[in-house]
Length: 331
Length: 266
Image (cartoon, rainbow over all chains, first blue to last red; front, side):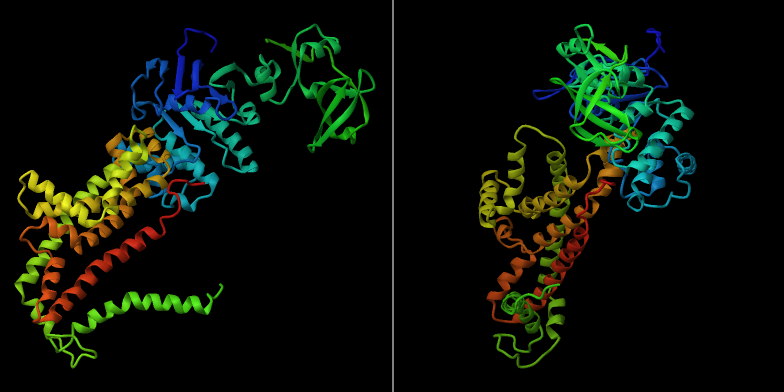
């Protein structure tokens, strides 16, 4: 995976896409390894969805080149790419049955009816929707529609499967269930999955590699724990998991060498030793409490286990920052 | 459900009566025995005018011409209106808003202006009046009806359906055939029916573009001036009402429940 000579499933080199004066994607270099479950994470308008559409072929880059398994994609229309997409709104054809939706890919490729219907049944079985062939998309629940969209996108056996905010429209319980299912499906099929999300917890739990997008650029690429534990920039520290960004002056007050640090709220301990502070806000989150503590002129978010008891606003606490808890960032 | 106030209900009833009573009179006098002048109540009732109308070759000629003109104008409108709608709804290009306005303009323009404009254009270009000059005149406003229906449906259709189709391996033609056209079909059927009805009873533009030929509405207009066999005109009018009303009713039912956004399956 780390061998630079190995063939990338998707490779971007200096890719830019502008809409008028807006640089939606601005000079992006990207390598996605075959078989990866790759997340493109970022706030809305950060360019992640445009990147996905560039891979699918719905957009053409204004500059730079895109390769899919070594094949240059310049000027290749979406219908000639071995890439399929699960759309955010699922985009199921409302005038077709579920079976016809799933069999659409083989149908336009001229696969005989019996063969493509058998194949559609296989795919529907894969997503646990056997027997739904004759229903209409309008008769399905949100979760079922998403499975149909997934089966339809997988029937052409794409080399890369693109998922645009795949879980965005589902409720929390279903979302957690689908996270597990998508993950195991990807492992079974061995297809490269690339998914776009603005939800950092979704990216951390599903992906084996994450690219964090901001303002049309990739600011950091790495394994989930790497991105979470060792953010390289202020943006990543803040966006992925709401870390404390410790400014150089504040770092000195915390006894650290002068520099910019990321300090995870869950790494700070509330106890009998350390810096004296007062609780400013407190947020009960079930298993834990998230409190903001004022230490002199500095503000630090701290996560404390709920069994530690209530932390009323204004109460005096002591903060202990264990050695090595703070991670030093570039500029 | 609230009941409307009494005054409003009386006003509505009066309005409906005012609009539809004349239509009822058309039907009534198709059965009168008095052929020269209309008097109320009719002196007697007869079905003979239906037989008379049936045996008049000039009525059949006019009806035939009207049907052929309406069908041809509708066919042209379906093709051109759909193409224009697709261009305007799906892409942005320089002057798009002006093009939109130019397409819709013929229906806002008074028929007499369209008629005079076409007549002068034909004479300037030395085009003799024919079946086709009428068809072109009618197509100007038929396109608008088809365009309006198609563009509304396209706007309500999720754009990702087209992308999904391309993504799954369908080229432009396959996407049009399997995804866009089925989405548009009821809108096009409705637009086509309205266009047919509009063309079928058109008088003003036709008088300027027809030359010696007589469509059914023109025939009726000329027939009203003659004092003999007047109920025959009423028989034909009743037929015209039937022929134009049914497609409009069908069009209404076809587009009525198309209000949800197709393809937004959430």
